[in-house]
Length: 88
Image 1 (cartoon, rainbow, N blue to C red):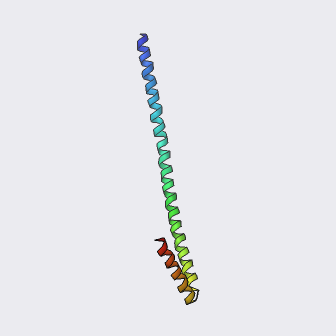
Image 2: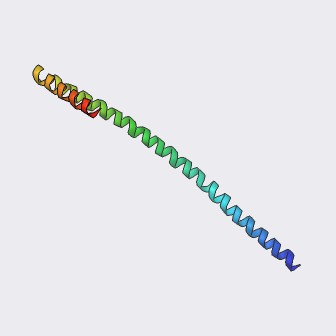
Image 3: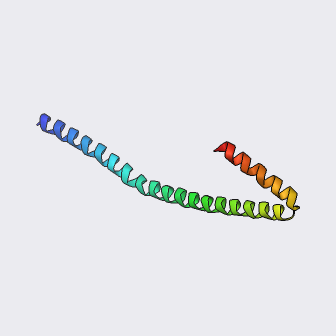
């Protein structure tokens, strides 16, 4: 009889451990999924903002070049081409 109670106690302990493990995984899985979705959404928004900043920077640069005299503009463009050739 004592052996039966001991085996039942061990079985109950194993079930309790499994229940806690499964409950923890199921309880946190939705939190992880929501956190992943928010991170992805935030990254997409950051990427769109970065692209908009780059377009704005290019427009400002073009406006600045357009306001210069032809010789100054040509000198700056040539300098940028040389710098780009060196980087590659």
